[in-house]
Amino acid sequence: MRPLSPTTTVALLSTAAVLYLATWITLVVVHPGDTDWSSIAASHASLLALLGFLVPTVLALVAVVPRLPVRSLTLLPAALVLNIVVGQVIGTMGLPVPLYLDSIGTVLVGVLAGPGAGLVTGSLSALVWGTFNPTVIPFAAGYAMVGLVAGVTGRLIRRSWWWTVVVGAVVGVFSAVMAAPVASFIYGGTAGTGTGLLVTFYRSLGAGPVEAVFLQSWTSDPADKVIVFAAVAAVVRSLPQRAVRAFAPATLPGPDGEAGLAGCAGEAGTAGEAGTAGEAGTAGLPGQPGTAGQPGAAGQPGTAGQPDGEPGTAGGGVGR
Image 1 (cartoon, helix red, strand yellow):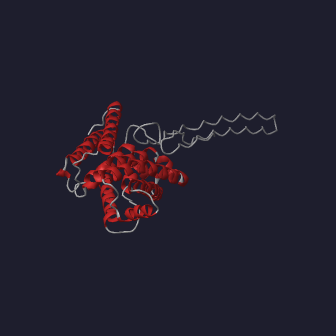
Image 2 (cartoon, one colour):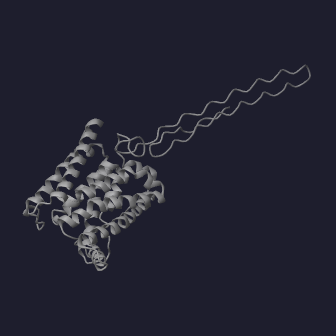
């Protein structure tokens, strides 16, 4: 499939972002009164959430998929399965852990394949998961945001543990901002075992129902995202740089080079300058040896190319 032009790609992704935000605002602010999340077709609210998040996901897929190499395309379904399986186990199996850990695959794809691929992975995870657990669908905008930011900050995550923790905490704060209103105003609380225990704890301290849910989100989400981003950073750092670059889209440089959807490889270095020729020796007087010629100066070595999209120059030659 031939990639779309950069202008069309950016336009589709921008439209998708606006639709994600509009759907989230509609669900949180309006929150239709016929809400029933027992099945996707049980109410107008569930259908609104499904269609409102499905349309921008399709637009994002059209924009991103043609630019992804085969290796990244094969990673997407594995990331979806990882998100859903881990999230379902943590959320429904009675584990007393106030975390989610349902964005590991999303962050991994974002860091390796760029923000567009991360956004698509996050939203698809919520929609696919929602086919048998519809309560996840309203959180799709938050999942998409996590993948988008993971792609934008991928270079920092690959290179610095300090930035990995900072980015994870900041993403967790924004995730809480998007998740807490959904849990409070649409569901009236949180259904997870571990997160529910945390809500109960805050209620015991005197917080109201809504305040307890917000406090739970502000506690769980930053910690959850720091753990997720650290786990992904450990995996990515264990991979050879050649393997990491193989996941990036072939066009449109991204956070590892110039602004765009994905990083590109560094430019080839320039060759070193050739050395100057040595001076010829002087002829000797009769019976005396001539002086030796001066050796040529060594060529200037070229500088090495920079990894992850920063242009550099390659090593050069030596004079003779």
